[in-house]
Length: 143
Image (cartoon, rainbow, N blue to C red):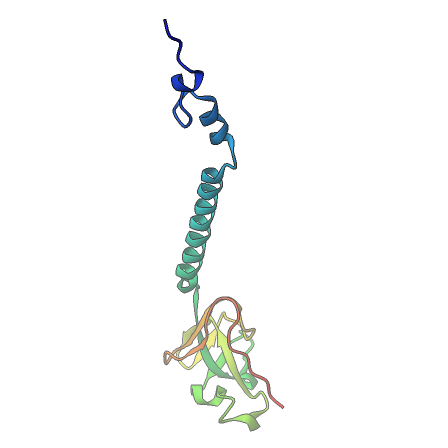
């Protein structure tokens, strides 16, 4: 009976051959590609989620007030928003300012603060956006 050559029984690249088991252990490029693709996918989802969350900031109302009109109950007299516009009333030297998150009662506002909150969207009663929530924002300097 004729014997078959050892390579004839298990040709290279076929399951069960020594050479196929060696090549599958090689560089592992399929595994590293899968990890890279998975990582890129996870990072992309994170970026998309962060961008979508941009509009989730709390909105706080603001009223322009006469800062010299503070009453013992902590309330201030509300004035027109134009008085708090720094470009029009630079000469007021702090006589008017924004009052954030207060409760209006007639021409007065109370239970808020004159300290500008961060990471919130601030909107006047007229609907003008003073500050957008999130990182960064508009800054101004005066000389």
